[in-house]
Length: 343
Image (tube, rainbow, N blue to C red; front, side, top):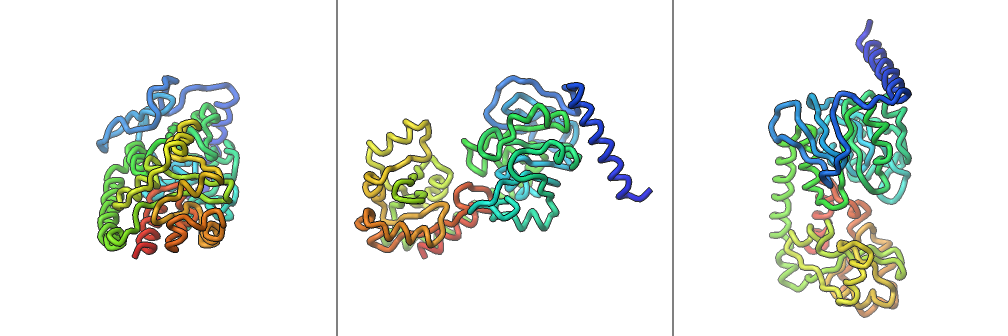
């Protein structure tokens, strides 16, 4: 029997077993877990190369018997970090096409990397358990929230393979990368990525220092779809933390505007209506998140914003569509664009 026939036979056997497990409601697979909500995110129980290891997840601890060799991601947000870690990712869920994704539904900043590594797109949109089973994974990673979340399917997915839940909504991409690395045995690679990015930040700070001395700060970060649909990103956002690391300061929001973020339950993004937007954009420079030059042109042509400092200085710059959700790939891209804008 050929190796490919053997693989197909094994995959078929695994799928049949998985379907049987779903039918009779098996609750035990090659992992152990409980429903104790002990953590908001997954972290590796051991930072060594030894296995088994226990991983804390949003649904309690899960023990992995061996380092995973066939990982499926149901979250395009988690997929980017797994690719950066050189994890053995064999399949991923995808989202409908949008400004931030390709036709296939992958984030533009790493879609070519996924293609080079032959990562299979298992589905677009809603999770497809049959497709995931057919991939015969030995680990499934799931996000707890967001449009790419499959959290409600965890009980089903955990009958296919050990399933880990990660919450990316309250973490920097660096923290998320570190946690994923601990779960899949890629701690050394995570350290390399973070050191590489730290070095890039240091070089960028040196490059943009003259612009800062010339008065390019403070800066505003916002999304601008229309005058009625604008959101200011604060220092607590991933993008805000990034520009702060570059030595930039964020323009202060008036107290009555800043308070609207707390009312909506978020402190990282503040919705601003058309009347308050001119008062919010007090920075010498404005960076527009999730936008290319046409979006910047619309902002600059908005008559209600003609008097804001960055518009008058001609210092409004797009950070492109991949700046909305940061991972290793997009964070590097954003740094490059900020440096280009301020050099």
